[in-house]
Length: 147
Ligand code: TYC
Image (cartoon, rainbow, N blue to C red; front, side, top):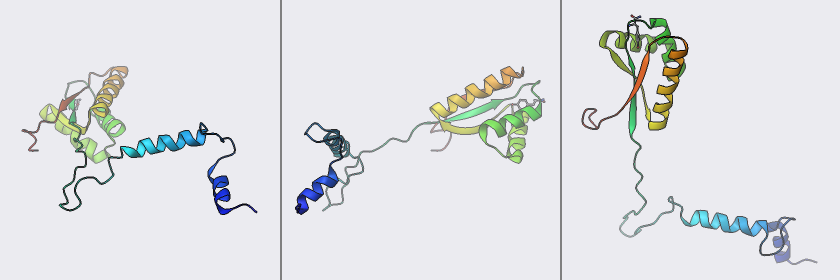
């Protein structure tokens, strides 16, 4: 009868791998390496409670701003706010009117790549519909936004 250890080995080793260079061993080394630099692992001094966890910077944020013009229909701007910025009908009406009255308004705040994509999609969508609606992005400034 097989010993307990032999039974355990049978369980751990998949059928396709036998020798030391098996896929199973490669898997084990890769997971070991991955976990060796786990940033979630508690380091530092447990006595003093001093943490040496790596500090992770918060990404910069960018305002996506819609600009006013004299030709784009109000309904088109409302539709853009709903389609590309996920705004409700009421919120879209409010933002559109703010752009109409003040010349510009923030449609949303995103990380760089998301903001860049929204700007591209909105400008392309407006161009294809032959409206001059323009969308720009601006880095959120620490001084002026009270952060
Ligand atoms: N000013 C436009 C009009 O009177 C409406 C408009 C609103 C256009 C917002 C652009 O981003 C805009 N038809």
